[in-house]
Length: 125
Image (cartoon, rainbow, N blue to C red; front, top):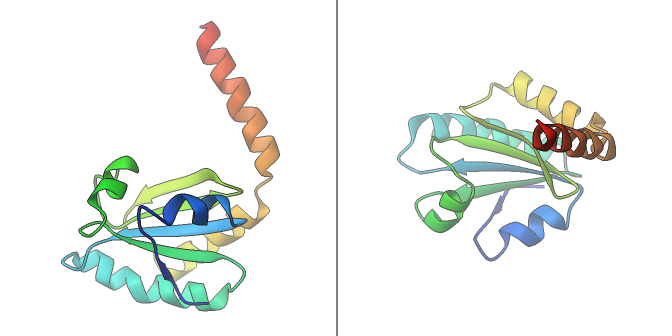
C-alpha cells in the first residue's frame, strides 16, 4: 500500500478507523523530509496492513498546529486511535522497522490502564 495524503478532513477518521497508523508530518522545502520520504514509502510497501499517512504541513497548517508540530519531519504512530509514539527527526530504515514492530507488539489496553493510573497518581500528588 502506498502512503495516503491526510488532510484536516480525513485525519481523525483515518487514525480512529484503522488498527495502526503511522503519520509523517513533512514539507516540500525540508531536506530531511525529502530524505525520509523514500524510507517511509518503502515501509508502506513492506507493511500493507498498516496505514502510512503523510501530512503536508504547508498545506495543512491548522492540522499541524493541532498536532503541536514544531519540527519536521515528525513521525507519529497511533494504535487503535491512541497516540503511542511521536518524535521529530528522520528515522533510518532499521529504526522505522523497530518502531513498526514495537507498535504491533504493544498491548494497547495495558498501556491505557497504565496511563490512567499515572494520571490518577499525578492528580493525587
